[in-house]
Amino acid sequence: MSLRSPLYDLQKELGAKFTEFAGYEMPIQYSSIKEEHLTVRKTVGLFDVSHMSNVWITGPDAEKIISLTTVEDASRIDDAKSQYTAILRKNGTVIDDTIFMHLGDKFMMIPNAGMNAEVTTWLNKQAHAHALDAVATDVSKEYVILAVQGPKSRDVLQQLTEADLREVKFFGCQYCTMAGETCILSHTGYTGELGFELQVHVDNNPKKIFQKIMDAGKNYGIKPIGLGARDTLRLEKSFILAGNEFEGGRTPLEAAMSWAIFWDHEFIGKDALLKQKEQGDYQRLTNMKCIEKGIPRHGCEIRKDGKPVGKVTSGTLSPCLNTGIAMGYVHPDFREKDSILEIIIRDKPIKVVVVKPPIVPKDWAQQTVENV
Image 1 (spheres, rainbow, N blue to C red):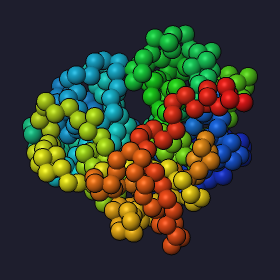
Image 2: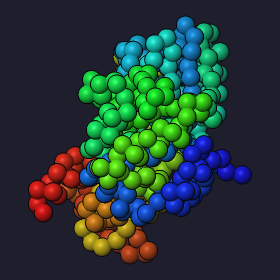
Image 3: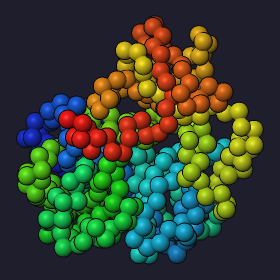
């Protein structure tokens, strides 16, 4: 039986249509995916992303176990800061990409949906193997995660807290009171827009906070947003979806995450990455935009002059561009910007152009308004 968010009944009242995702029954949409998508790009939307995971990492060596198991040196991340990183196997492939938050003398890690048990087990196994005094504790069922995303997100949340949200810099995190309840706030998100995420303990009335955010956002046209728009939003910004982009075992180098690797520390998988980096002949994640009518999907073959050169990992119809877009792994010889490739959609080759990320520019909504 699928798990449900503590906000399931409220979502049902709001007209959500549900889908199963990573073991959870979650809202796929409330109105339409396109409407919800454009609401987030232009104003503000509220997501329940409680299918994501929560893992506390505690003990004197908490910082060391994060540094050992991820591509980030956690000693570089100050208190009240968070960091995007990846947890690797010894062969350099990604177990999960994640964010961890430095909160005083402990850390909270946010693994992807359905990865809580695997990540917790891996961290504890490595702590034991390396004699580190650190413990990872899976508390996923104890938290609701809310994401408030869009250009007006700060204006909405500022009405509900005494904390000055303009002082919370990008990837900052802290405990705060929101709508009279304690939560962990971070200036993070998965949409490419201004946004914040709230980790709310189930004892701290997450339903009340959700409703208060909806009330505070009425004048801005806030809408509840489902996983359908979450997926199209992240793909327009070239953000990775773990189950798609890491399928089959991919490394951070292949996934175009080299920018996230801090090489000047020892971590599990480092030797394998250095070897791959030296060889240089690996496929790399590539962004593409259709120049012919068609909607790419996960698994579609990518060709160059009729010859296979890769596969699509994520694809959709961009609500902002009204054209097909995709990410996929492509042979390094064929992924230069402006290169023309073909994606096979329903047995038909559709021409695409290779573009630099993000596929949809940061100022898309502003440009759209100016051009109306």
